[in-house]
Amino acid sequence: MSEPPKVTVVIPVYNREKYVRDAIDSIVAQTFTDFELFVIDDGSTDGSQEVVRSYCDPRIRLVCNEINQGIPKTRNTGIRLARGEYLAFLDSDDWACPERLRKQVAFLDGHPDYVAVGAWIEWMDEEGRPLGRIKRKPVSPEEIAAQRLFQSGIENSASMARTGVLRNYGHQEQYDICEDFDLWSRIAAQHKLATLPEVLGRRRIHSGQVMLRKASHKKDRRLEIYAAQLHTLGVAFTDTDLERHFLLRSMRKLKFTPDLGYLNWAEAWLQRLQEANRQALCYPEPTFSEMLGRFWLKVCWYASTSLGWTAWRRFWGSPLRRSTWQGLRKFFFQYSTRSLPRGIEL
Image (cartoon, rainbow, N blue to C red):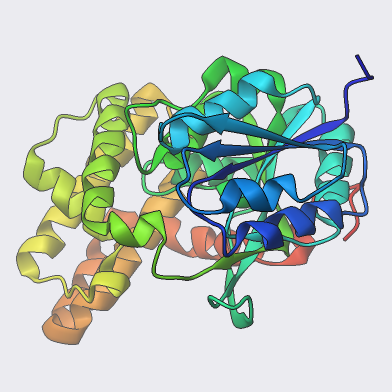
């Protein structure tokens, strides 16, 4: 058997005949060449397998599931088969920049105390044309870990991790959606993760995406993940609390305007989370409290469109505001290339 490569790249595929060639080509074109690529077809009924078989590159290996088993189980197959020290994920309808693997390998080699690293991505349309919209994720391990009670702090399709760590955690296969949120939330609870503040990939928007087809189901899965973390934190909650917690991160997207009742709930809820974390220390401080302060500012900002100065008086009168401004300064610093760890150049 040949020497194992430095990196294993895993691309799960299900009926992506139209897009998978772009994903594979983006890996073949990497400036870092010491990799193997597992394209795992999850029971496709179109020509996806034929596209993969058209490549003669010995680094590319096609693995076929006889029936559709779902993304979590398919990714776990890739983790099990991987021979590389590091494993990089890429979705079959996405695209990796030529320098992605090189820069992420350099980071993990230079920072043995980190177990995974992500990157920013840019949205592209169905034909692969950039849309000029960048999805930025937090850079520091503290911010990534603090955010996990609300959203994933790392972009899965632009992630690279130590293969042994992924084997220890794996995807929970009962999650047919949001499985990546769950995975990185669990890893970030115990290990250091980072994101390179640079666009190293593109995500395609098209009508066949799982996220679009299962949008209504996504919320239910997120609520389950929130509930698991709240149990660990030691916070009692109702179904209404979960629904309102979900709204904290989705106000703009859902065009939600908080009323006085929601404002009252948000202040009490955020203070409960803050106090519980002071006891349990599930999330890094002071970063967690600073994040809660930003959410309090966000709630008051959106509420002010209907409540006016009532919302702002509540903001200034709340203890939550004390951690808001320092949190905002750190938050915006997260989205600057100046936040890149020492020893790594873009």
